[in-house]
Image 1 (tube, rainbow, N blue to C red):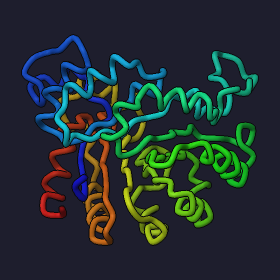
Image 2 (image 1 turned 45 degrees about the vertical axis):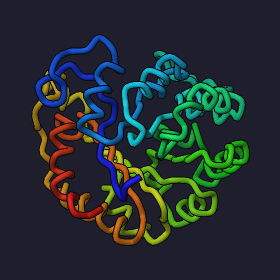
Image 3 (image 1 turned 180 degrees about the vertical axis):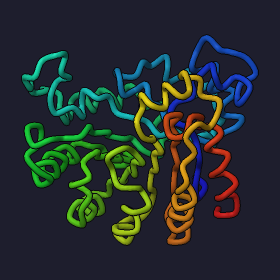
Length: 280
């Protein structure tokens, strides 16, 4: 890959017609064909909600050229410690949590896509002490899981626990050759603050996900039409400088932008393209 790539978290938005697309599409793959003319990478968010369908995998690959890259999310059945609460306060353990067997089935589904994938991302929700005792327990669970991950799979982890972001944790990632996913999100420290503290422990690829603040608030502002900036972030320059530093130090970066970050992922992407244009 190049030193950096900029893309969006998902791409299947009719409100991008006029920004990225010339006309609506009935399928995500149809949008991806035009998307790939504008961007060089994309995050596949839909795989988080269900095991990938082989038809989707081949449709996505057929919509892009050989230089196009993906980051993909692992199904939440693997990353949830407990079943999703459906109005009940009782915690029911998830029998598939960090299941080697289910992860193997997931990899089988996306196998044709793997040569184009920069990061296979495990996204964990915030884990309170009822769900995970502490960082030590989390790393122990991950260590057992990583033993089952085939060599060459670019495993990446996103934690939503700011108390897990410690020297011990980043040393663990380095030892296990796991990619850190920086998450710019409500209740987490800014990604550039995390990098300033622990960047010396990182090498290779970093994934930077710009997710934003209160989702309901920005959805109300936009009416869920994602074609304008409604919440411009004053510290974007610091994220751009962080990315430049990663590259200067010999690393690589993928920036995945969510509509919820500022209101329109493609318009936010334009800013980072301008700022990082000479960084590669």
